[in-house]
Length: 76
Ligand SMILES: [Zn+2]
Image (cartoon, rainbow, N blue to C red):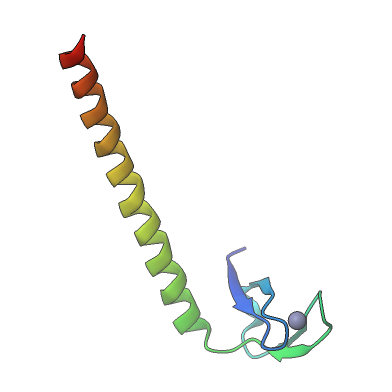
């Protein structure tokens, strides 16, 4: 089941809820504040954007490693 992260408007805790819960109300596990699961499409896009950012970072790390290996070879 796909999950989405929502942030409690009361205590800022990040809650993980199933996508199917859109429009439903959930209780924050930390402060028991009741919040509605809404704007899921926006949240989903934000999440995807963050994942893409992570991917880009991973690729950069790989390139960095390659550069380092090359430098090491030259040094040896
Ligand atoms: Zn809360």
